[in-house]
Length: 300
Length: 218
Ligand SMILES: Nc1ncnc2c1ncn2[C@@H]1O[C@H](COP(=O)(O)OP(=O)(O)OP(=O)(O)O)[C@@H](O)[C@H]1O
Ligand SMILES: [Mg+2]
Image (cartoon, rainbow over all chains, first blue to last red; front, side, top):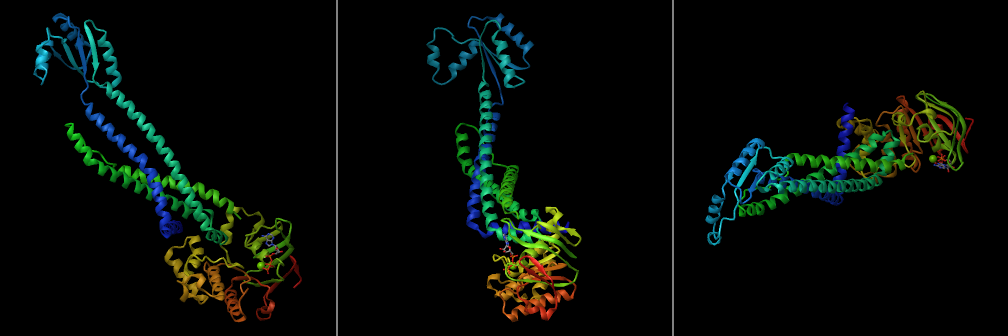
């Protein structure tokens, strides 16, 4: 147990020494790995923010139900009783006169309304169903549209559905991007480790001749790959967090212009841990592939 | 301790460097392997250290038949040996002390104790004052003694040295051989391959004389 610990400690120390002894190479590898991780990480953070925007904007979902112009009081009562039977949630009746009055009240519309020979607006209901799943709203819309004297039903949250689909597509794209860059990270590690193995050939040979196991010889390279990947992940986290901090001010101003309050959410600590772990894991994988290939050839 | 019978090594290409030789080395013996250049001395040392595998015959070390040993068992077998290579194989990218630490790191000795033992080994070969130097800054004789310190630091039961006095003058060679003699006195089996037969009179070792891969009668 003590021997095991001492060996791993020595391997980590040796990996750190190797990272430190070629600062320029290390820096370049870290940049390559960091940037490879930054792009998908930034993508995920932006998608998360967009999803939050979507959620806050879609808090209230409405169906607007317009009756035909000739619908009378009896028809309105009929619709009302049907709503009571089918819809769980709230609704509100907007009489055509009331709608006209409101239109008149809004700026610049008074003269236009006054010039109309008669009220062109229909009676309407604003329905706010309790359950808001896009599919159910869609079904409800179809049901209501088939009722008598209903001219048109408008689903005010149709865009939510499209937005959802868009988000799913974005997520898929970013995931593909992440896979590609992960492969890149493995390749970068593969190459740096290959060079390491070449430059450490003498040490590897001597160590083997005097009784080093395969694991002893490989360990420092694994730690090197994992450490390099983890540091690259940390760099990526810093880049994403820094970039969002730069964007946060302008975004808040923009949101204020539209009367909203929206703050960009940065990557959390779990994202940092995720990036570091992903970097370390992929680095380890690259090192493993590289060491297996380059040491197999050096076997006595 | 070491028992060879009909031991043969044919290198790829067909050259038989060692041909059907048989001998026995008992624990605690001091043995010289002598012979002309190309006689097969290094090959025999490598066979004993399980660096090369025999083509035919058997070689039993510490009760283990090397010809039948699994590859994964090799590292543990080699740890019984202290090896001094003909080309020394020092690592020039690290200090004298770090060179001697390597065998101890391999067995996983905690750092502090490893340093203590490495320093004791360096002291034994008279290099403690140079522990922070790089091997490149040492003289030929000092490099040879460094190689010996690395070989003995792990307290091997068998010390195997290939031409340890290779390019040393008589005084430096004597110094090195005296170090081997001191290990022999405390019970370590010492096997030295050397083309230099002038020391045989002095130490009266068990001599294995090779000629074109064959063992000559003593
Ligand atoms: N790896 C190898 N492949 C092929 N032939 C080899 C190999 N190593 C040694 N030989 C040959 O085997 C023979 C014995 O070599 P070896 O190195 O054992 O001799 P030696 O007695 O140690 O010589 P020296 O005193 O010059 O060190 C030589 O003819 C050499 O050319
Ligand atoms: Mg030789």
